[in-house]
Image 1 (cartoon, rainbow, N blue to C red):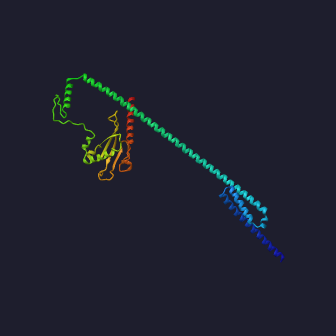
Image 2: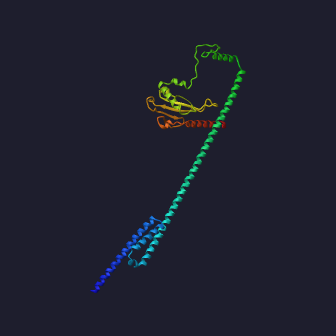
Image 3: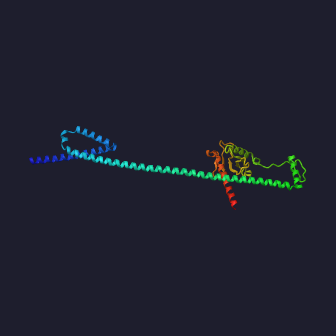
Length: 339
């Protein structure tokens, strides 16, 4: 009987020890989880303060008898666990700081590259603008010099021709002068070959761009007046005239062409002339916003005044065509000189 009771006590003691070891293991796991949460949410100093406060609270709540039992062993295990946790936390922090430094270096490198590329692009655009401006000025200067030379040459040729005609005057020449004087004395008269003035004949006037409205229908004239109102706001420094496009007279279509030129004191009859082709919708008189489609000479883009883009006509479009024509003329002049 005594032996069986001893065996029962031994089995119960083993079970209690197993339960105690299992409880310690569960408590250690729980403490480790709590410790990792504290380290992830705080720095090293803050985690150390929390650990000390928890340890003090644990010491106050701990039973003195149980605290004495295996105190040294638990302290050693706890210190070792704390040391491992602190080492892991330091390693994690160092790794995180290293990743942040690498990311910061990469971002700085990308920003420096973006900034350098922007500076290079701006410098390239400025150099391109300066080069094009210099080329345009050279072309315009060359064209003006050529025009000045042609004007001086024509003036000299005209004076020479007048002097030669005066020195080589003949009776037929004098008869022609008589008819010219008679024509100036009586406008509208006709001078026969003999020099006598015959009245009653009307003098024929040279047709102009304004006279071309006479061949338009009433609808085409009203459309032409609409185009004049539109183009009057476009280019203030350009002279303009509107006429029918070739073939529109017979087809009665509302197709027109506007001629833009920029006269000056040195060049009253300006060259070159820029053409803008118009097509007016048939319902322009009844529509709230009449549709007028147009395209600038040398371009495929078709604009409509009924849209916001079509109403924003720019005078620089005409200037670009003028510069292109002057450049082509200067190139042709250089080729002819070389030939």
